[in-house]
Length: 539
Image (tube, rainbow, N blue to C red; front, side, top):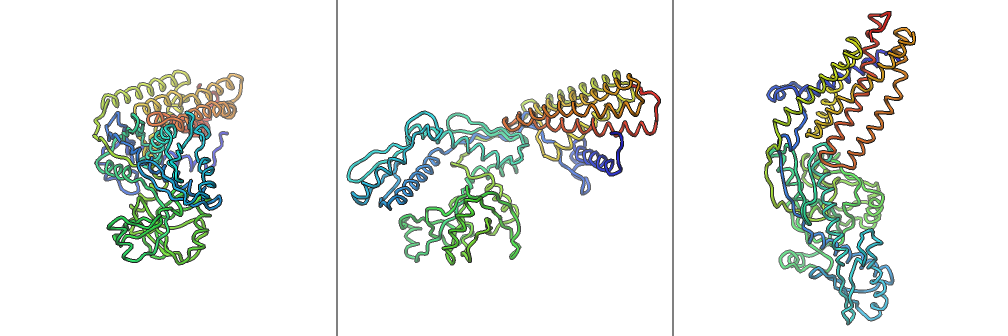
């Protein structure tokens, strides 16, 4: 246990040096950090909204927009069901939040009415709660039916729209989960958003991500003469099932089929990159198994046709299908810069918003607690560190107490370095996590030193006692810290905002404390034993 090869020593020292370099910017003034030579890191810990202020926004969710999307989904589902069972013919339109359906003949009505009734399922069967049906279907006579969304289903759609909007926003604005922003439902149709430390540039970026629903669809391009296109664009008179969409590059609007070939839900992941042919920025996307199969089947029978890639109602690109595309991936081009391609990839990975969002109110928030809290946190950390250091010296002597205190200081340095690499935001709960880590960091050293003291009292020699102490203490140290780590991970995945911040600092502190106690302190002890060769342990 006390032997360290040169390779192990190299990796341990490398980790310590990297931790020092990444934590160093936190101790330097801003003007010094900005002038650090490459490749010196410049990232520092960010302070949370309660310590340094930031952006405060109140967003309203356009629930009507979500309802319209639901009506279109229900309409398409009913149409598919009627066509699948006997090719029942019917006309359908949406008006005033109602789907109106008219069968073309009595024979169609006879076959289609039972199929239509089946589309309204029990709300409980969909895990919505509240009982009742998803759709309210009324027969108007003369082969006409009125289909409305039930109140129970409408309540579920509203709640689900807000919950899904919060999830998508969290992925868009804080994809790494380290910013400690606050996203919470407020009232029936509003979302509270707080982003600590957001400057004007960051606020502008957040607004752009909020305003984009990022609804991506692949639609078939309809070939039409200029007369039909002109009526569609100028008078809004498009053929049934056809809409027009403008092109992002300013080209002539194209007619596309309203029903999409594929949607953003068929994508698995997206990344920005450069085209191998033109060397222009593109977004490369991989489809999930369902999407890959749909894309392959469609392109196999539409070689020579154009397919439009539409983002939020605007055509990004509309290439001609040269051959079947069955590799499960595709590329989106459209005069991107690398930054815009990166933004689009981020939006697609986060998913589309289920409804449009409007910024009802925004303000820049000053620090609620500010310098007083930072000063109090520093004081508490300093007193805690001093108290633990004095305790270790009094309990285990100058030699072993110093080893434990150096390991503790190294632990704090590595925590600061790790949080700086992650770009994490430090709030009061995060400071509490660090202070708690200071108290917990020496637990492993206490277990090891007590075991060494026991082995020495049993008559073992210094080397044998130290080796046995470290070896037999490893299992209980890992057991104790793994259970605490599980609790920290649970807090991270279940909680949000400041709770996550506490969980992150606690988890990193646990990992670093084990590393410094079991590896760094053992290395220092090993070096001291080889050089001093004591006949009796001063512990």
